[in-house]
Image 1 (cartoon, rainbow, N blue to C red):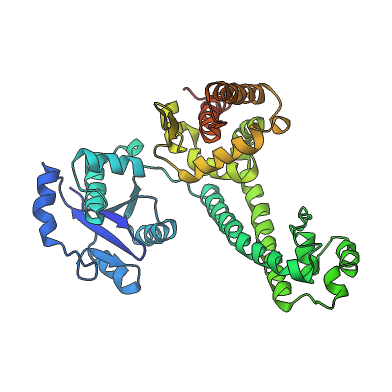
Image 2 (image 1 turned 120 degrees about the vertical axis):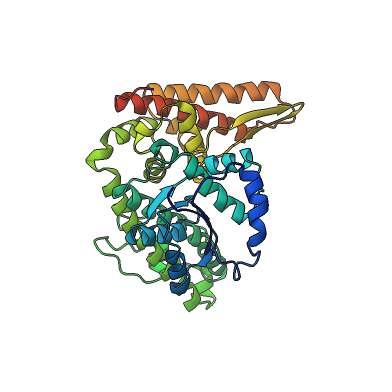
Length: 399
């Protein structure tokens, strides 16, 4: 039997459990062996911090393979990279599979040690069966995932900056405080570029904000635009430049020839660049999905409708929360508004599905509650079903 190391990733460390053979009764084994483990991670000999010393101690264990969940993206990536560099095989177990395995063997919940043991035991039970482990595609898929996460981070940091500078403009340039404009071909938004005095390459100079500011009531009463506002605007332009650069790189990767059929199907569904990037990371290659259920589960759309008396809702289930959020947003922006729906049979089916559900809940609901979230959830689940069928057809796969 190989030396199998199950690793549960925490914020600054990995909690490990080594198995050299599969215990006959996992629950009994846990009860007896956990007594020898320290609850203090600093004292525990099989907990390794992400430092040079901590990693060297992990390597001294000399495992043949380490088993991880794809959580804590950066730390798990770092550990996997180090182990692969040292000739240690890295296997990945999906969160749903790991959770089900732990529960089925009655190991405790919310316990890092139990999670590590479950990962090690799971791999012992399924050793040599590739389908039981996640297959991470190297190359473009990894780059696409990294760029998507970078762009998501850039989007998240913008809102508080924008809100703050708009507050400043309420007293320094009220006429422009809540102006919205579309980014130019360089990715910069005209208001922030003007406010931050940022030079824009290959973009014709527009004097709109100069003229608007000349007429501003704040300027008339001697109120100047603060350096604080200017620097915040400059910061926003820098973020938008990074975002624009990442988006260009992302487009180059997504439209590589190997993703041609995927993009043809995404186009039919009018799925935008960012959501299709996330979808690709989770479903490529489609050959790994033998059923619609596994496909929906991977995308976080394997939930069930809940109905109890006057209460209705949707149990989202397991899977990727980010994919689920992107799919909800896609329905909200591309399917709910009639004018935005994709042309063709796919758009008609999704539109009809959404409209019928909306009409149904309007008739059967009192008090004006249209169950918008439930309708979006149902339509997203239906969209996944159509997407699965169309991708299988385009790639000429069974299923």
